[in-house]
Length: 186
Figure 1 (tube, rainbow, N blue to C red):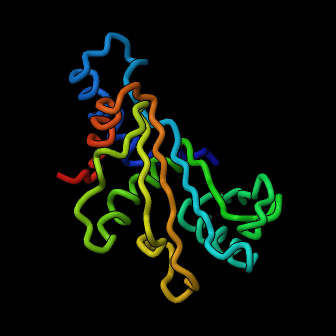
Figure 2: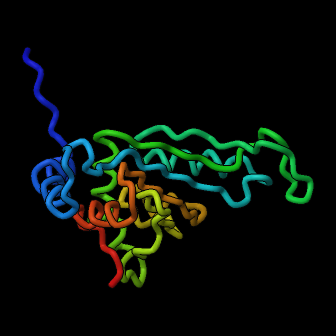
């Protein structure tokens, strides 16, 4: 039986066919290796109340796994802080790093499905770049992802989404994400 070639993510095809050429033309890169591309996407979820109830972290891990399609890593406290009742090595949240096809699939779902489902959505801020071509945004609830069933949710949890690119400036990263139809606010 012959192996079937796995279908490539839609955004990867868009990048190879259109975005790459547009970026090279706009910024006049001499070498194709200079053209910015997506490096990774990091999802981070801190769990409110994880100190008093460790089951909340397990629930957050299962929800993050549904959203990302990959098993998350539990983040733990590095040192004890008595004022917050946190002990060293206590689970406080979870994170996952997406690369390759899963990264493109997640970004596609974020742009096409999740962000338009945010209440009173007017676009994401164009000022959330870090100066080195990375973009960070926060979501206040995990319910905007269609993989999460409203009936199964016990707590509303937010998450941070960091999109890391190989761009050297904010303008290059903005043009890259704009090429992927990221809905920036006017």
